[in-house]
Length: 145
Image 1 (cartoon, rainbow, N blue to C red):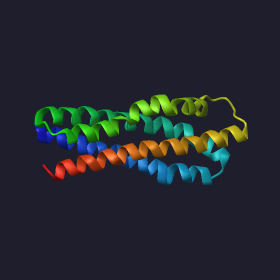
Image 2 (cartoon, rainbow, N blue to C red):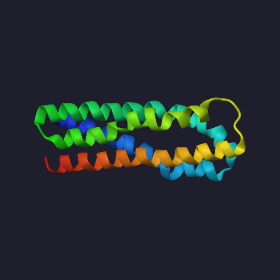
Image 3 (cartoon, one colour):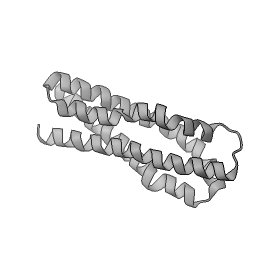
Image 4 (cartoon, rainbow, N blue to C red):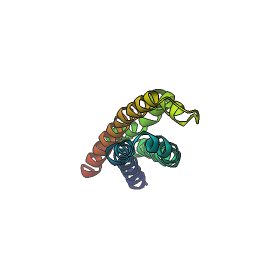
């Protein structure tokens, strides 16, 4: 049973980290290079599709990593899972004000839209770092098993 939760923690961390890194490395820079009008038009639909996947993979990692630790007493599973799971409160507290303004549907001045999109990209790198660091810890836990 422990092996199942360890695998689930590792896979869900990889899904979260991969999605977050893709958004930081490719999707958001691509939308910004396409111009502000395109970036604003694309942000909402992209965000609404990605958010449930990102939240559920982070939550699944947190729960399965915690269960793996409970079954094995190996704290690395919890440590990696907490790093990935930390993206949830970070998003709710640190990013949600920016997200809400970008998704509000009201028209933003060009300068404000550019500033918010740039800020979102910078904040999203923190999510990517949380996911990648958690994945690395979980990968080492699996290798040292």
